[in-house]
Amino acid sequence: MALQFQTIGLIGKLDAPMPNELLLKLNEFLLGNGQQVLLEEETGNKMPGHGMETATLEQIGCVCDLAIVVGGDGTLLHTARSLADYHVPLVGVNLGRLGFLVDISPGEMTVKLDQIFSGHYQEDRRFLLRAEINGKTSTAFNDVVIHKWDTARMIEFETYIDGAFMDAQRSDGMIISTPTGSTAYALSGGGPLMLPELNATVMVPICPHTLSNRPLVVAGESLIEIIVCGNTNLDHVRVTCDGQISMSVQRKAIRIRKHHCPVRLIHPPGHDHFKILRKKLSWSGHPVYPE
Image (cartoon, rainbow, N blue to C red; front, top):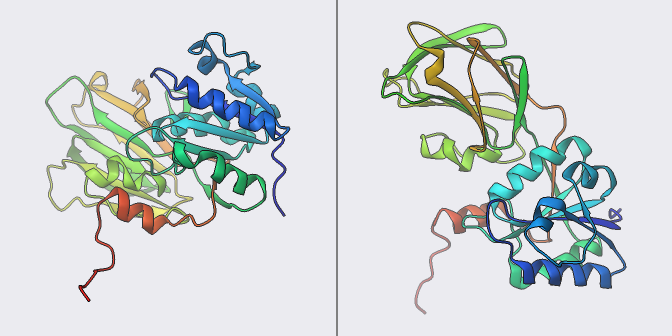
């Protein structure tokens, strides 16, 4: 049975001028459907005179049946971390570059949304990671990265999986990625592509001194512990979530595990993950032979 999307939240692109015309068009389209619209307040601050009702992300999480993210993958990452605990499904309109997560183009926006509102869509549930450090927690949709900071020297750390010692290494750090993040920084570090429905986490060392240190895939439920050791100065270590949240390291232990609430993504009909990979990564399609 289709979800009933009656109250819609609109979230615009982070740290960029707002595509005012597109958001106003979207608002008019939704109101024409008889739906209530809430514009995220920081988005609204960049659109003087918009005339829409505004709300915080938390308020959108409490009252909205669907959130439409207008921006790039970075905007969706931020929104997903904020709304996952509210179980609000997300749909993305792509104004960015790659668009692995935001898969509706502005030109087909109203057509695709009509399909979704009529019940023709695919729902995709993906997990977040939760990092615990210095008594604080942060979530990540793509990856948690332990990395060197403000120094040209490697850092030293030990890795434990569910309490079992894995290894000690000297490197520039470690990328701990969800399947969603396997197309991001982890891919650049030589990690494998993982299908988004997999319940697994990939650990990708960054420039390890021992060349046999290779990416490792572990169970999605695993507890991963990174303990900074040796002569590494904690001032030269940072933990970054999704490239957007950076935390200093004041204690040697960093704990990463699966977050309890998944992200719910809504796609229009015909969504094909392999088609997206072919397009975004410039893979070859079927060969075309002359007749």
